[in-house]
Image 1 (tube, rainbow, N blue to C red):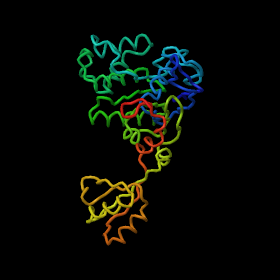
Image 2 (cartoon, helix red, strand yellow):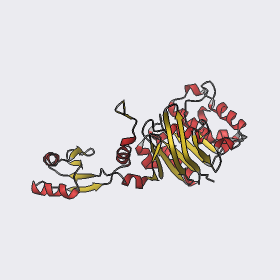
Image 3 (cartoon, rainbow, N blue to C red):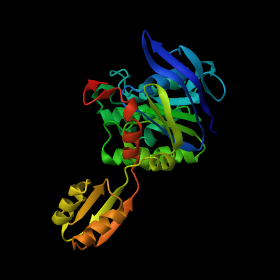
Image 4 (tube, helix red, strand yellow):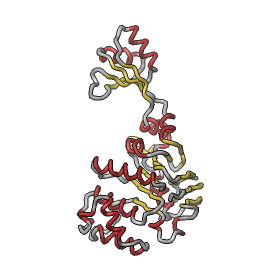
Length: 309
């Protein structure tokens, strides 16, 4: 069912600015691959070049071994959601999908099927201009699914989704990958990548930073924290801060639990013992995906605190 997305030495320049810089990676079927990078990293430009919407300055991007524009009836090969707002607001959801189905040789029954699948069957004849952002995202996903393609690409698909919608999207992507499809997902939400993706492609300033599993990437982060539970939280926090650690309340029971970075667990335990502070818990917690991302992309962030780097 699935097909490989292959990006090789892909480069895109706009005048003196290089948006994508000799980028190479592979997206394989049967798994969800997350596409991450700071704002301005070149993610959307890369997706547009894979879909032949923008021409690369150099390098290649292929789907199942050939450039996308050489696939006849493209929606049967690649389904994509890049911008949920790029639809005619005066058309109904059913009319929008029907037009795409006719132009791609897709049976009309697929329109009803995908509207049902994304939860828009009851508003199929309502004008898209009256849809909320979350509903437009669902319509965009329906468009991607219309041709039952082996490759699916989504750019920030959960923007505007309520919690139920986010959970639905997460399960949908996992199911599509389990069916053997190639699922390529761009998002800035680390929590969604942790819950949804198997593999990651991470770029910064148009260049590849990492292409590996979620677990392996998270493990590369060095800022591990230690969770401490103690009935003497204020006293312990003062001792650890004096020793150079960073201390924050942990969870809803913050008065008794602390998250500590900057000191290893054995040093925290020794300081507590020396100061006669009782510890009920002392647990080292691996770096989160978000922490690893922030650490490993720090030098590739184009805009920091609203100012260009």
